[in-house]
Image (cartoon, rainbow, N blue to C red; front, side, top):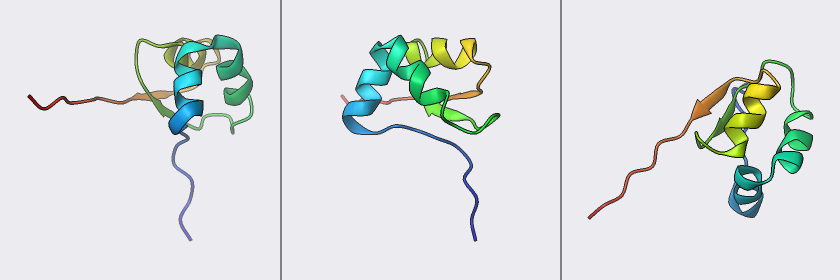
Amino acid sequence: MSRLEHVTAHGIPYGVMRRDYAITKAVLQGITQGMPVFGMAGTNLERTANDLDIPLWAEMYGEAK
C-alpha cells in the first residue's frame, strides 16, 4: 500500500487557494500536521503554509515559446 506524501489542490480550488487567504487557511488546517503542500510560491498558498508552519513544495511552471 502506498502512503500519502503531499497534498495539492487542482482546478478551481487551486486558483482560489492561490488568491484567498481565509479559504486557504481553512483547507490547510484540515491536513495532517507536517504533511507538505505542493503549490505555487509567492501566493497566498505559500503565505498561509508559512503562517501555519506547513512545508510548501514550490511548483515550477515552464512556458514554451
